[in-house]
Image (cartoon, rainbow, N blue to C red; front, side, top):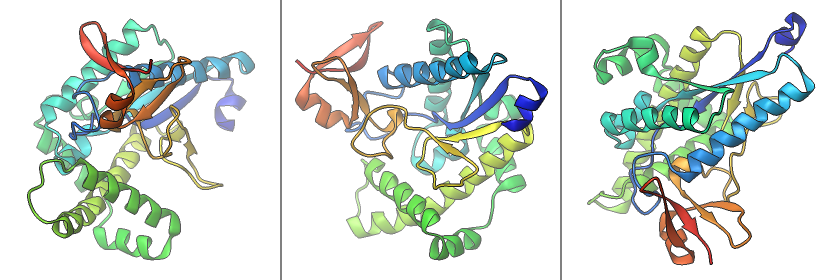
Length: 265
């Protein structure tokens, strides 16, 4: 950040996230962005505007949508990821969030098939699984991340027909793949945006090179808008919950003819 300030330039923030909606219908309303994304994007735009109030050159934020990087590992079709990303860009324009922009694999590899895009990123940037296993055994923060990803993979496997223990074994293995691809995506972002301040939607330890952000209120710091829905409480404040829980507490609200969030009476 100091480099931007010394040069008197706008600060560029990069945030890997907003990949796609969870494939678990007990968590989300569908595969397109809804009130959770709308409120989160507005928060990020206000963050940049706030920086501009104390630092006149201001700040912009690049949302680096990583859905295509690991969509096959989390059971989300590439067509749904494309639709989510396109709708996210439309939302930014419609809401006039002038400090935000988006970036995904299509900006890197154009019209290549999605599988080929993934293969190129992994070949160029992904660490091997044994390296990650060693980190999980020795680093508490990496272990916490591994467990968090494994938990989400288990929860999102709504159509699994085998035993619970078999599912957990499968998700533990896939968690290493998600971690490797996440590292690869981070390296690719650094390659294309070498001068940027890195943000994260995951909790970060003190002294980390990344700044952790909490987008919206939730009981669990790991919950994101793409793994949940918004419940507007009686006082109007938003809270992220699983869809199944929000349905018990409020009524469904539509926005532009599509399910948006739930309203508590």
